[in-house]
Each structure stands twice: as structure tokens, then as C-alpha cells.
Length: 93
Image (spheres, rainbow, N blue to C red):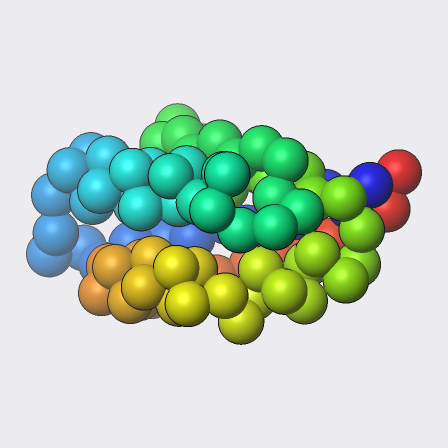
């Protein structure tokens, strides 16, 4: 299993709670649509970054498929409309 974690800082001129809610819907709906994506959780952070994504995928191949999946690319468009910084980590368990 691979855990894929992403942290974002959002634009100062946006409503960060509303942006996080829109990102949550866009990303969490991918479970069941993207092969190998077992779970996805998006939460507004209270310290450090503005928004966190925690996902679990079956393996490294699933991570690669997730990155290029058309539905994920649509979700990224929403995320990129708000995000100004991104930090990511993937690790196997």
C-alpha cells in the first residue's frame, strides 16, 4: 500500500474555507472512479499549511495511474485555481 499526502497553502485573496470545501468534493469523489485509490480525505488545517490531502492507494502503479487519470486532472484544475504552494510525500507501508 502507498500513502500519498499533499499539503497546500492557498491564495490569500480567496475564502480558504470555501476553497477547501470545493477541493474536498473534487478530490474525495475520486474514490471508486480511479483504479487503486482506496481512500481520500481532505481537511482544512489549523497549523502549518491551509489544506491537507491524505490518500491510500494499492501500490506505486496505482499512484502513477492516479496522477494521469482524467478525473484527477479535472480535480487538479480546481486545486490549482486556489493553491500557491504544494508539498507532497509518498511512502509504502
